[in-house]
Amino acid sequence: MSSQTLDLEEDKPQFPGSRSEFTKKLEFITPDVYNGIPVYRVLDRQGKIIEADQDPKLSKEAVYDMYHKMTLLNTMDRILYESQRQGRISFYMTNYGEEATHMGSAAALNPGDIVFGQYREAGVLMYRGFTLDQFMNQCYGNAEDAGRGRQMPVHYGSKDLNFVTISSPLGTQMPQASGAAYALKRSGKRLCVICYFGDGAASEGDAHAAFNFAATLECPIIFFCRNNGYAISTPTSEQYRGDGIAARGPSYGMATLRVDGNDAFAVYNAVKAARELAVNENRPVLIEAMTYRIGHHSTSDDSTAYRSVDEVNYWDKQDHPIGRLRHYMVNQGWWDMEKEKAWMKQARNEVMQAFQRAEKKKKPPPSELFYDTYKEMPPHLQQQREQMRTHVAQYPENYPLDNFEKDRD
Image (cartoon, rainbow, N blue to C red; front, side):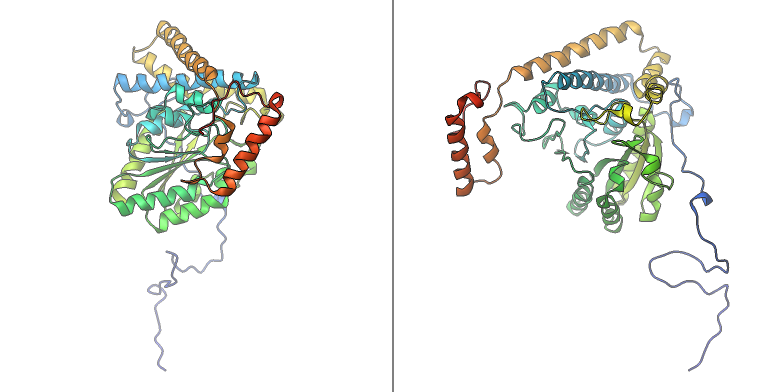
């Protein structure tokens, strides 16, 4: 067998699965070799445009709409949080401090794009047209709730608005979103999927499967991570040791950007550009929005057990996304304290009216438990339904049904 001497300079690695060169140095790659991925932003904390060429040049009406919805969401959060504390609804999760990640991203999407949310994206749904009445009906689980009271509060969904119903387990929506994006690609529609998740969900195995599916199948999807500092009570310092979530993107072959999640304009620009990449090139994009969860994780959580009040107050007072956008509007001469007072009064009135309407509506009948799983109810469910009805009728004092609708049949 003849042999051929190769010049080391011409000898390139032929191993499948990587793009690299040979080296003579034995050197481990450690995290401190790389500089941190920068955080893209457009507005500073005083609401001033940092670089003129990055100004999205949104119209006055578009900025008004964004601000109105951010503050309306904040108002709804306060009222529904307090209503849970009063025992009027069973559960709630606020969006305090993350409003710009909702409205900035939603404004950059096409209405036909499919949204997979986690459970802190109510503003995206609000921006798309989900009404206050629909939010309230869902949280109350009344007869007007599309889910007929079967879901926990804040687990919204809307087929009409292309917002897939939220489920509680972390990360389950991510591989589903990759599959939906692959289906969009196969359909030939110039649309994309956006999948929201948090830094905690990024630690789930489903996240890694979703990233790999999306990259290898070349799916038009935007993975939007809200890195708000905490996964319930677990801080990011205990979540990962690398440079956040964005650092994972290139290793999966995804275009990646880190953005200031408290800057509505930066989020808008980022998602707009990501959408163009996803739709035009059938590529997955990862956006890590750096923000802060000002509220408790949920009404089942007391965050004072694991973080200081001073820490929360800093973000609430010094770098709130609503305050930053308000500064911009004031700087433009579009907004002042009189308009602020009038709008906040109107926002509270609108929320309270929807709240009162939802509270007065009857609940679905308990027998709704057995419907809408099968087109035709199978015999075993029919039997269970009749057993429940017999039991309730036998002990009416334990099952007051005055505030419930009548059974379907």
